[in-house]
Every structure is written in C-alpha cells, then in structure tokens.
Image (cartoon, rainbow, N blue to C red; front, side, top):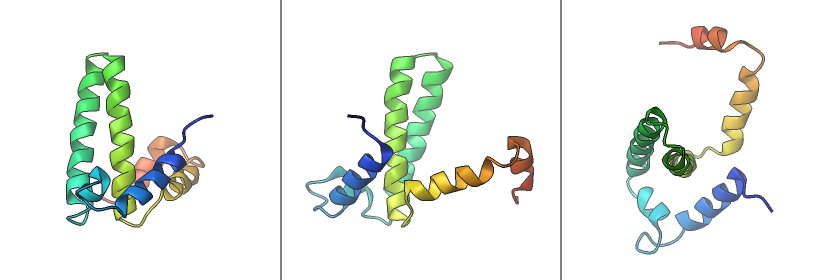
Length: 105
C-alpha cells in the first residue's frame, strides 16, 4: 500500500477539526494560516540548504515537511492538491519558459 498526498490531505482535514491543544495542524491554522505559511517558508529554506549540501537524507525529510505544510496552507485557503494538479496539467501544454513569460508581474 502506498501513501499519497490525497491521504495526507484527508489526515490534515481530520486534524484541522480537533482542538489546537491536541493537534499541531489545528494550531497552525489558528491565525488564518499565517503560522502555517511561515513554517512552509522555513521548511523550503531548510530543503534548499540540504540540497546545496547534497544531504539527501535531510532533503527527503525537509521535502516531507514542505509537502505537509503546503497542504495545510492549501487547506486553510480552501484549496486542495487537486487544484494544484489541475494547474500543473494546464501548464504542461506549453514550455516552462513560455509559461513563466506569460505570468504577470
């Protein structure tokens, strides 16, 4: 049996409804997800450092942290992994350079 991001998403939804005293996920969502977003950024920096150091064990752990915190942020925003996958699918019809050039800002 494999574990999927959809499985993690379901766990996050369950934990979000528990008391913040009993759930780290619920605690991350207390302040409209600001803490979750902060943790997502911290984990991304830690993953980048692990990648530069070529520390694959640490990179794997930090990548797991990123995925968890990203799904918590998405949950708090009312989005799902399917929303992200749909956007990725939309982008596959064009080159990465063309997609990047089409973004505003």
